[in-house]
Length: 178
Image (cartoon, rainbow, N blue to C red; front, top):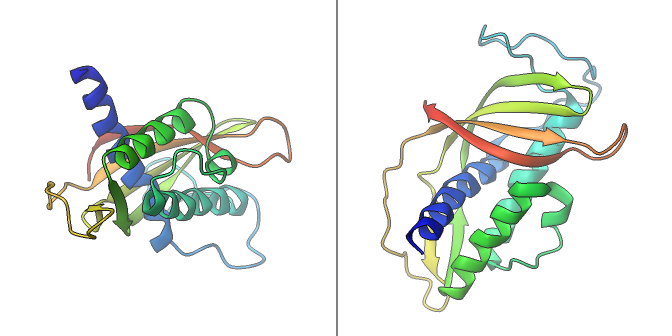
């Protein structure tokens, strides 16, 4: 059971990261769909508009799902797949069964994207979880939790099943503090 608790805690951290996209602004209409070098100079490229839309939708939907703590929320199938979808459902189940919900916002600083194959992209984002908090569902009171969390540089892997299919987050890896 302790391993399960650690896994849920890790999922919670990743979930918080995923919600950060609500603070991001989508690319301007008419932006070219080609990858361009990012301003960070780290070898990454700017996310293409389709990947950025999918990444923003992931966070927007993830934040909304946290407010309900419903692991059966059908929107999850639209934004995640594989292990990430399983982890998100497990986290929401954990919070729901414990009478908790997640509220707030996540801060983002997208460093860029790695084009790792025809159907795979990795978005690197510095996620600030300080304002994504756990609340008691019944009373609305803030739950006891770490308030000053370090921002985490994370790699969000997005995949699509076939050309033209939607991008979905399949995994999240924390690379370190940022």
